[in-house]
Amino acid sequence: IRILAIESSCDETATAVVENGRKLIANVVSTQIEIHKQYGGVFPEVASRQHVLAISTVIEETIRKAHMSVKDFDAIAVTRGPGLAGSLVVGVNAAKGLALATGLPLIGVNHLEGHIYSAWLYPQEEQEIPPVPEFPAVILLVSGGHSEIILMKSHLQYERLGGTLDDAAGEAFDKVARLIGLSYPGGPSIQKAAVLGDPKKFNFPRSRLEGTWDFSFSGLKTAVLRMVRQLEKESGELPVADLAASFQASVVDVLFEKTMMAARKYQAKSVVIAGGVSANQALRDAFKAQKEFSLFIPRLMFCTDNAAMVGAAAYQRFLLNRWDDFDMDVMPTWPLTRVSL
Ligand code: ATP
Ligand code: MG
Ligand code: FE
Image 1 (tube, helix red, strand yellow):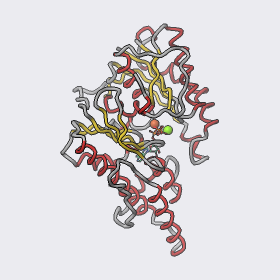
Image 2 (image 1 turned 180 degrees about the vertical axis):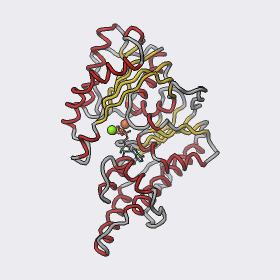
Image 3 (image 1 turned 45 degrees about the horizontal axis):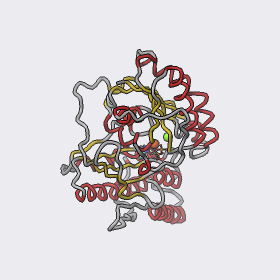
Image 4 (image 1 turned 180 degrees about the horizontal axis):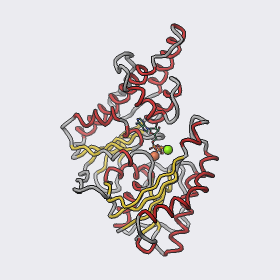
């Protein structure tokens, strides 16, 4: 089963061809990061118009790279939400056009379940087929707009154990990067700066919110802000590497500890980390160092937004004959817990 998938929920115009929900045949991601950098974040109006400009080329390039034609596909999948309405509409309409022209089924996917299913993907060149997460799985989903711990007892079934009460983990990276003078997106900038820093230099708070599976990163952000102001007053120069490393260590500690506690409590057979922040090397290293649970982390290319993950999630729906009608609308806010079969 081959699915052509489209993703346009934020500032990446992406399409991919995925076989049997796992094997990547072709993948194209056109990012608008350079355009949004000047605003220090995603500018919605600009984002949707950039999708309009890019989408046809991106689809064509993907089909060409796959060495296939539309008749080789079994379904067209697209991200329906959550995301920016004006951006989602571009992908959804392109998917409808393709489905209409080919007669193929149209499958709408939740962007967050896409992030989760990125852990099932592997590149075509892979010699050995990697194993898949076993259920029950505890998922740490950490991205630009979301930070949640999810319990998955079977495919397409998501039980939200907890999540952030304020900023998402990726958002915290982005905001703190700006505070210490690093460029957007903050995650990669902080990771890079942190390499030369001392993670123990500043003892930033670790908000554990015991007795819940929730997170909070706003106190940490405020603590960094206070430290920055104090340091600027004292010396005028910021130890950017130490600030980045100490902030990163605080985020990683909390994400790691809480996920491990949830995995123990729910007797998980596997732990999955996904979403843009799962690209973070310190976070990956923390999870890789534990031997209690079998761990699934998407390859780097599948951590931040891409369409392959949408094709992977859509495959599970395809197997159940769950496709959507042509009046399918976008859902800018669409929690995982409201995803139904
Ligand atoms: P959502 O998936 O919640 O709708 P999004 O799609 O904008 O949000 P993603 O593309 O999944 O988010 O992830 C982008 C986020 O990941 C940004 O906040 C970015 O700073 C963060 N990120 C990317 N790489 C890293 C990294 N190496 N370390 C930490 N954070 C990272
Ligand atoms: Mg993005
Ligand atoms: Fe995302």
